[in-house]
Length: 520
Ligand code: XMP
Image (cartoon, rainbow, N blue to C red; front, side, top):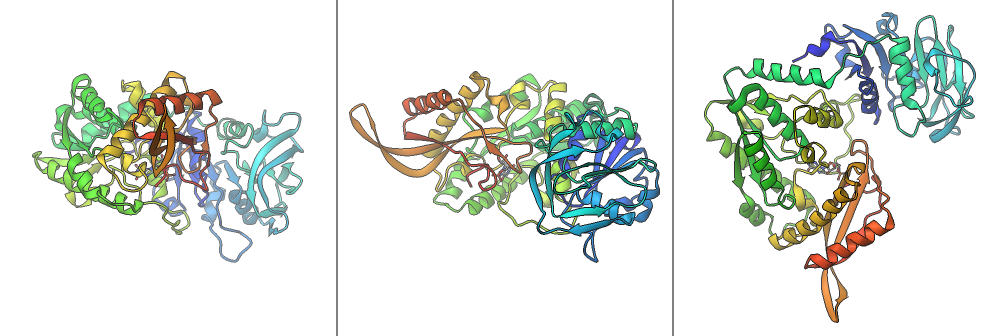
C-alpha cells in the first residue's frame, strides 16, 4: 500500500527525540508529505525517491563520545537539502569536521532568546526585530564551525544556534522549531520545504481517501473483513472507509463492556446501523465484565482482565462469520513510529494500554490498517471528508478500558451509573458552552473516598467526583485546561444537584508529567 512513493516528500531521520513526530506534522500541515525513518530504514530500496529534503531530528546521542548515532556518509552528498535540528545540527558539524563540546555548565533547557546575525533563506519572516523566543533542550554545543558554514543566529548561551552552508544547501538549528513554545517555528519549516527544497504541495487528505478506498478494494477483493467498532474516531473512520470499499463484506463487532459513557454504545450502534447501513453486531458483555472485575483494585490487573476478555469475546464472535480473511483496525502513524525505536532503548512501562486495535494475534487474519500513515487530527479530517458525523469525528480520545480506569478502586454497576451521570453532565456542558473543541480530552472520574456533606438539613456521606480537562498535542504531555471560574461553579452545582451518590466535586489541576491523563 504505498502510492505515497510517487509524491514529493520530506524525510525525517529519527535519532530518538521525544518530539520527532511533531516535525512530520508541521510539514504535513503545509500539504507536503513527510515520513519518519530510522537509520536502518535508509538501507531500503527507493528510499530517496522523490525526496526533496532531509531533516535530521534531535535525540539523546552525543557526538562528543567515540560511539554515536550516524547516517551513511553518502547521504550528505546526495544533493538533497538537509536541515539538522538539535542533535541533527551537531551531527552535521561533526561530519564536516567542525567542533561540538559537551558543556555541563551551559546547558540550555526551555525558553531562550535568539538573536539574528545574518539573513538566510531559512529564516525569512522568522524574526521579529531581529529577536525571537525559541525552545531549547541541549547540553552539547557547536563551538567551531566547519569550513563552508556560516552563523545565522545565536543565543547568549550558544553562539552557533542557526548555521548554514548555502552552497551545499545544508542548514542546522540548535533549538526545536517543531514545538509550539518556539515562536514562528512553522516559518522555518515553510522556508525549508518551499524555498530551499522546492517541494510541491501534493499531500491532500481528499486524495488519501480515494487512495485508501482503492487499496482496500484491491487487497480484500471478494473476501470478508471484520472490525471491532468502538465508536471512537479511529475505529469509526476505519469502518466507514472499509464499508465504502467492500460494502457488506465488512462485519463490525461492538463489544459492550458496560464501561462506556452514558448512551454512547446505543448511539454508535444506531448511527452505523441506520445511517450508514453497516453490518454491525452488538454483544452485551457487561455482566461478565462486572463479574470478572469484582473487587479488583489494582489498575494493571483491571487493564489485563479487560484486554484479555475482549480478545476472547471478539474471537468467539469472529468465528460466527464465515470466510473472514482480514481484520481492519485503526493503527495510527504515531503507533507505528513509536513501536520502532530509533535508538534501541525501551522506555519504562507506565501503563499497559489496552487498545481494541492490535489484539487478536492468534486469529490468523491478515491486517488491514488504513490509517497507519495518518496522525489523529488527519483522521478526524478524513472522517469529515467521508461524512462521519461531527459528534464522532470531533470526539475526545477515550481509553480502551473505559470507565474502569476512571473509577479508582473496585468497580460496581452502581458506581458506573453514578459516574456516567456525572460525566454526561460535564461533557454536555462543555459542548453547550463551546469549550469541548478547545479541550483535548475531558472526563469525570469517581474517587473511592466518601466525604461528609450537607444537603437541605441532612447529612450526606457520598463519593467525590473528580473532573479532568487537558490540552495536549498528542497525549504524551498535557496541561490542565483553565476554565472560567463560573463554569466550574456551574458544573459542581449541576452534578451535585442531579447525581445521587456524589456530594463533592474537585478539579484536577496537574499536568502530565508528573501526572498522567487518566487516573489509573
Ligand atoms: P495517560 O493516562 O497514559 O493517557 O496519560 C494518554 C492517552 O492515552 C489514553 N489511554 C488509553 N487509550 N487504551 C487506549 O486506547 C488504553 O488502555 C489507554 N490508557 C490511556 C488516554 O485516555 C489518553 O488519551
